[in-house]
Image (cartoon, rainbow, N blue to C red):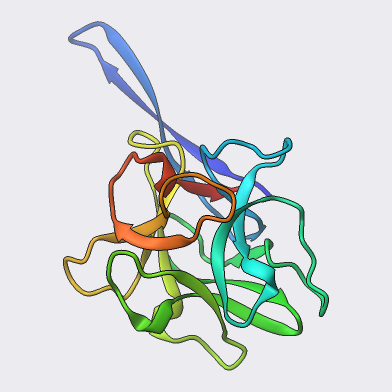
Length: 187
C-alpha cells in the first residue's frame, strides 16, 4: 500500500517568509485496511474498518487490525478502493465468503445515525454503494468519506458512533471537519 503526497509551497516574498504546507494525500487505487486515523491502538494494532463477523449483511465497525479471515475465504478488513483520488466517487468493497461485499448506506436512508453496512454487490452497484473520499491535510490528518448520492445539503460523513472504541459502528453523521472520529486513511 502506498500513499502519495503532493507538496505545496507558498512563498511570501513581501513578508520574507516561506510557508511549506502539505496538500491532500493523493490516493491511488489500493487494496488494504482502511484505518481510523487517530483511534488508539489496541494491543499494538491499528483500529480499522471491519465487516462485523463476515456477515451478509454486516455492520461496519471499528476493530483492531488482524487481519481477520472469514471461514468462507477472504477478509472482512481488506477493502478495495478504485479511483480513490480525493473527490472521486467509487464503491468500497471487500471480497469474502465467495462474495463481493460493498459498503452500503443501510436501506438507502441518508440521515444522521444511519449505520454503514456491507451488502452483496456481485451483480453490480446501486447508488447507496458509492462513496467519495475527500482529503485536505491543511484541515485534518486523514480523509473524510461521504455518500456520493446523498440528498443536496445533507452534508453527511462516515463517523465512529460515540467516538473511538472497538466495536463501535460506523454511521453517517453531520460532517464536522477536523473531528478525529471522522478521519480515515489507507493503512
